[in-house]
Figure 1 (cartoon, protein in one colour):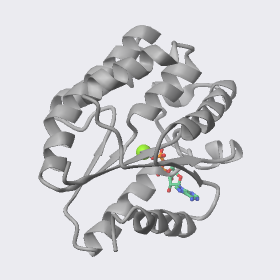
Figure 2 (cartoon, protein in one colour):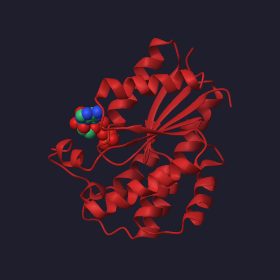
Figure 3 (cartoon, rainbow, N blue to C red):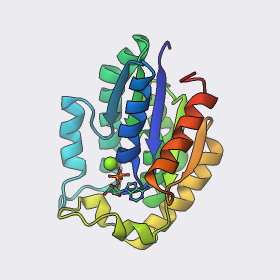
Figure 4 (cartoon, helix red, strand yellow):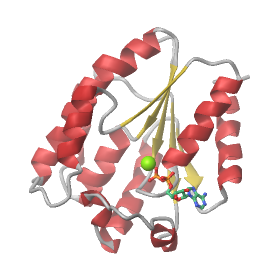
Length: 205
Ligand SMILES: Nc1ncnc2c1ncn2[C@@H]1O[C@H](COP(=O)(O)OP(=O)(O)O)[C@@H](O)[C@H]1O
Ligand SMILES: [Mg+2]
């Protein structure tokens, strides 16, 4: 693959969208061709799947939820991510396979090996060149989320968030090229850490 695939992972409100935008700007400043995208979603079909999976109050059972995420991923990977990488672009994606292992695996208790298998099918074997995992202390969850609207998954309780945090820590250990980023820091300090990793991975010179 000619391009580079960078994934931002971590729970809600840990700063993924904020850092993704700053990351894209840094890459553009270095003259790179960049595609910013997200999961679930990223293409018209996958965005429609996103509507179902994040709709508050809708009855979505864990196994159905898992397959919806994987359906979104299969569409997104084939339609958008792989073609962009083949054109030599840098793809920056908010959430990918690690989110499914964290939420559906560690969060909902679905077998992790099965999730791994489904992830491999949905991605056609594509793995990120760099995964940035943002984790913050729970006290910031409410501080950073004075949202008028909270989607279905953001309403999950504290215990679920703690389970996922533990899950993310284990996943980082088992995922090549995955790095923990302390999301309690201020926005510019976190961005500086991200840029350092871009250099380390020779994504920018
Ligand atoms: N390092 C940070 N320190 C304080 N507030 C932050 C930080 N990063 C992001 N925020 C704020 O927290 C909220 C959630 O950030 P966001 O980037 O949308 O998170 P995510 O995409 O992971 O859900 C936003 O209001 C954002 O401005
Ligand atoms: Mg976001």
